[in-house]
Length: 328
Image 1 (cartoon, one colour):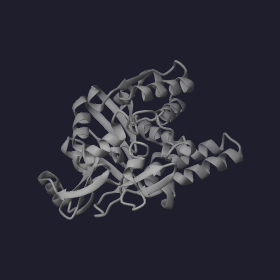
Image 2: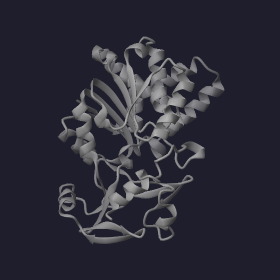
Image 3: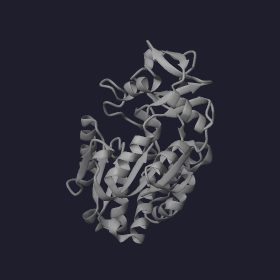
Image 4: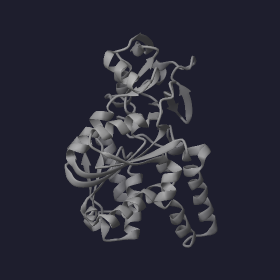
C-alpha cells in the first residue's frame, strides 16, 4: 500500500493510535502547547474577544475546536471569555469536532468537571457536519496528523510487511511536487478536502491553528515517531516499523505553503501567518500574565512565567511552531 494509507491505518484504523483516548504530558507520548499552560487558550480566547468587538454578530456564533483531545483548550478559552464577559457563555454556542466515541466521552466528562452543567457541548463527527452562520474554529497540532505520501527523487514510498519500498511516483503526486519545487520529503494528503468541507458548511469563519513547520519546502524528511517522549526518525536503522506500528505517534513538519494554498483555493483569505511567539504576544499573552501577577503569589507567578517561556522561547516552541489565521 502507498504510505498515506499505511499512515492512516497506523493512526485511525480500528486498532489505530488515535482510536482511543491518549494521554499527553508526562504520562503520555508527547507535550503540546495546551498541556504547557492554560494561558495558551486564554490568549487565543483574548484574540477571539477582540474580533467580537469589531463584529458584534460573532457574539451569537460558535466556538468550535477540532482535535480537542480531552477538551483542555476549549475549556481554557471558555474560562477566559467568561472572565472578560460572563454574558458570552449565554450567547455563544460551543462545539467539538471528534469522531471517536470514547474520546467524546472523555471530553464530556472533563468539561462537566470544569463547568458542571453550565456549558453544553455539541459534538460533530466531522467538519463537514458543521452548518452554522459564524464559527471561530481553533485547532492545535492538527495538520501534522494528516496522512502523507513520501517522495524521493522521482519515486514514492510504499509499505509491504512494514518495510518501505520505493517505486515510480504517481503522476498527480509528481505534478504537486513540481509545483512546490519539491524533490524529497512529505506531501500531506487531505488538506484540500478539509478546507472545502469547512468552507461549505460555515458561512462566516475565523480559523486559527498552531502547528510545527515552515512556509517552504525543506526537501528533506522530517517524518518521525514519538513514543514515551523519545523521538525516532522514520528511517532510523534501529527503528523497526512493525514494533511501533499503531503503538506510537507518527508525525512530520507541516508545509504551511500547502495549507495556505488549500484554504485559499477553498475561498478563505489568509489573515496572518507568523511564529507562535509573535502570535501569542499579539493576542495578549504578556498582558494576561501581568494581570495574573496582581492576583496571585510570587511563587505562582514565577511558575506560570516559566511555563510561558516554553511557549514563546525561540529555542523551544516559540519559533518552531507557527500560527495561521484564515477568514471567510
